Length: 226
Image (cartoon, rainbow, N blue to C red; front, side):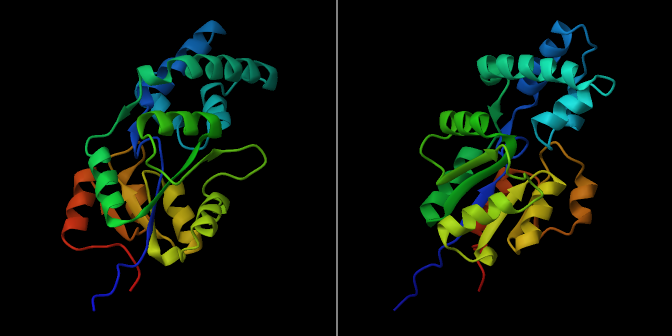
């Protein structure tokens, strides 16, 4: 009798992994800055600000501002992004196909992002309806990646061993989060962060595209612990 495949899970970062959201973030940030009479930034500069959550995004964009001024930029950014995020957010090529392959394998799927929780849920449910078991963004009072609290929450809900799950992300924080709990760490080198910095952390896997992940799965790599 053949043995049933071992259940496993995949946890995805959002920005720079599932979606290219840089145009939307840069647009809303620059409109907020301009409304406050501040200098705006190129897309490449905004790209370097992304990854540590919305508070750090605003902090990096307003290094000389005081807390009151930053609060106003943050408010304007949130209001603008809530209305216009979908003007500059696109699913990366091959991601829908990858998720379909994993679903057919019986994998559990989750999103773990440092983007504010409300935005994370709205974007994921709009672009990937009924695809993910759990969607977790940055929540007030709960540490974000690389703290593994959110990842532990997902693993506890799934009741799966960490070694049977993969965390795929484009930042060093994603890899550090995975490694903190013994989850398999997969680097998405197509995203926003420095490739060499990712590889320096010695991830279990590195992928240049979603298609490479699909190819690895079709070659028989189940990404589950023996």
